Structures are given as C-alpha cells and as structure tokens.
Amino acid sequence: MPALPAPSRRARLLGWWKAAGVPTQATILVSLATTLVAGIVVPILLSPSADAAPRLEYAVILPPLHNQCTSSWIVPGPVAEGTRFPPRTVPSPGVLGAGSAVEVIVQEVTDRTAVLHSIGARVVGREAPQRGLRLFDSGCGAVLQPIDLKVDLDESAASAVVNDTELATPPFPWTVTQSDPVAYSVRLDVTSGTVLFVLELDWSWGDSRELTVIDDGGEPFAVSSTENTTLMCERGGGWVTSEECAD
Image (tube, rainbow, N blue to C red; front, top):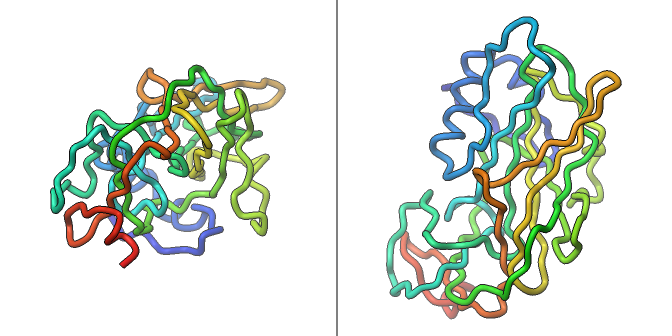
C-alpha cells in the first residue's frame, strides 16, 4: 500500500484517493476494517453489479489507545502503574470517555452520486456515569484525514456541527461517489452520565431521501462523563497516574 500523505486538517481525500485506484482503495478500506480496532459495521464492496441501486457503505473506527488526540477509554480497573497495552487494543469492558471521537468513512458503491445532508446522534438510553480509570493518550494521527465535527449528547437528538468554525468548506451538503469517499471525525460531548446512542446519516440521490442508522456492530455506542474516574496516561509504553500526565 502506498504511504498516505499528511494533508492539512481541512483537506479532503480528493486527489490522492482518485489517483490510488480501486485496488488500493479496497486495500485501505479492508485494512481499516481489520486493524484499526473495531468497527466495520457494514462491509465495503467495491465491485457492485451494474444494475445495483444507489447504496452507501460505511466503516466506523473507534479510537484506539494511541494517536487519537483527546480520545480516552474508561475501564473499571485496576490498572497497575507501568501496565502495558498494545497501542491499538481497546480494553474490555470499557466505554469511551467524554470528548472522544469516532470516525465514520462513507462511500457510494454503485458508480452513482449520493449527497450527504447531515449526520447526527439519537440517544437511546442514559445511565449513571462510569466509575474507574480513564486511559488517555495525547498523541494525534489518522490514516485518512477526516472532517472534524462535534455532537452534543446532552440533547436527546442533535445534529453534528463543525468543530472548526473557520472551516473553508461547509461539511454539508457533501457529494460522495465510489472514487471519492469522505471521512468524518465526530467528537462526543457529554457533561454527565453514560449515554447510549446511534448516529444517523441523512442522504439523498435523485428525488429519494434516505436515513442510514450507524451503530457499533448492532449495539449502540456508549460514552461516559469522567467525573467518577481517575486519569491515567501513557508514558514510555505503560500507564501512569495523573500526577505524571502533565510532565
């Protein structure tokens, strides 16, 4: 697989993706589905029949414990000082910490054009905030450059809005095709409690309007506020307590 470029935060996938060609695109998307922790929820097919109806496919990538900026995982514990986790292993059981982001990659797979109108969250349950350890790594990085959005999960239903108010191009409406997908990084904001939710993608083709529900392999996503947690961060390949996190 050719090395991915490192475009600016606002860059689309445009030029490199088109130049890569279908075999490379397939390799990248299969790699995302099998190695980036979790979450291909609908298989991506790059060879549909000629008479197939317009169809979107999507992959969901939950943040690993490495290279995801402000994302964190809350685990019941205990986690001893210096405990090592493989950098792309999500501890189980665990839920996302408030402020974490999930990435959604969307592609139309029938050589037609689809227009994305919005992505939002629908809350399906609320629970008490999780107790335990909040595992946090402050590094940043991504395989595909996403458009940064955020969603307020204190609301029962909320549309994702742009995280960068200076974004040169509005994130919606957005056109996707088989050769030109898009990636969104959706930051999950919650002030109190554990929120169970699904994402909903509003899109259209021609005169038809569709709503695609995006979940975590048939289950709702879960994210918790962090008031009942003890912060641990990664240093030297192992987890240390919060007193050392600011160093």
